[in-house]
Image 1 (cartoon, rainbow, N blue to C red):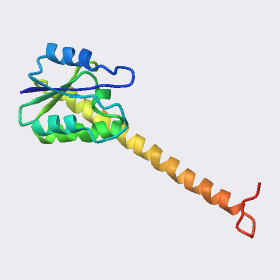
Image 2: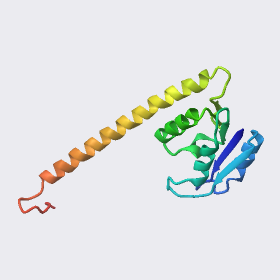
Image 3: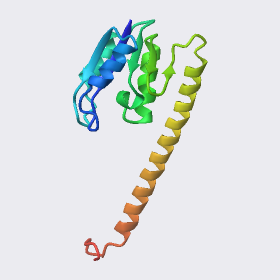
Image 4: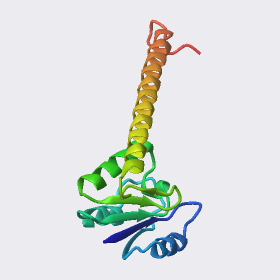
Length: 148
């Protein structure tokens, strides 16, 4: 089964163009999310993902409608593949169901490398922030009050 997922955005609050593109791509059932927030709870997405079975295909207008970060995207694609399904992104011309599947595997390896890079940068930033906070605390006076 070809399942479509559309999510509105601040720049595109009406998901109708996405829905039309998904229909044109052959989506038989389309789940639409109209929530404009950073809230990770996306019931329509959970339902779309839950409805995927072996041999099914999840079609999205673009990868940014599927995930907000590369890390999130990597884990979502991993869930799709574990269900035996494929992912098609229309804007990025990505199809993990291609006959030999090599393009999809290359994409996933690349995405995995980018995800690891992103994690490393975040860990480094976190360490630097902690060290900077410790240094700032070292400049406090004996009374425990900060110097101005």
